[in-house]
Length: 127
Image (cartoon, rainbow, N blue to C red; front, side, top):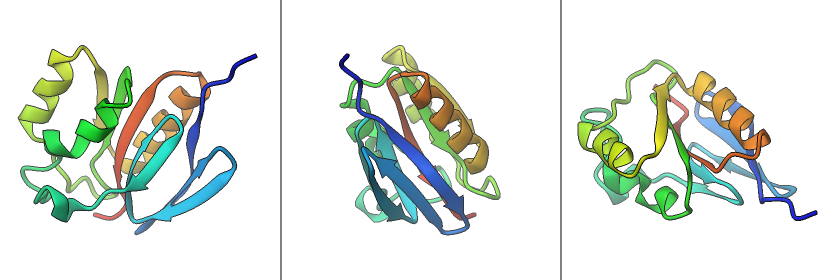
């Protein structure tokens, strides 16, 4: 049986996330996660701010993994927005998405991943 690679968010608290990827656990403040991969999300690379929020450039690397569903977290206090252009990009590519509170986003991401879905996510662990 050929099993798809998985990545699960095994811990979330203010300023700290842990992602377990094929038996290895990695720690991040903010992160990008997809089946079989995870990395730090460095806002400085794209000039991201709470407003206007998550930009298309922030999710391109995740989209390149061939995902079918995208989870976009807004932070623990819902301070992080999502640019309209980001939602447009996802719609144009036919990718379903969820935007919401980080803890709910983590639960949804893990649930979809455990169901074998090709899900990607971008997560903000503070405000």
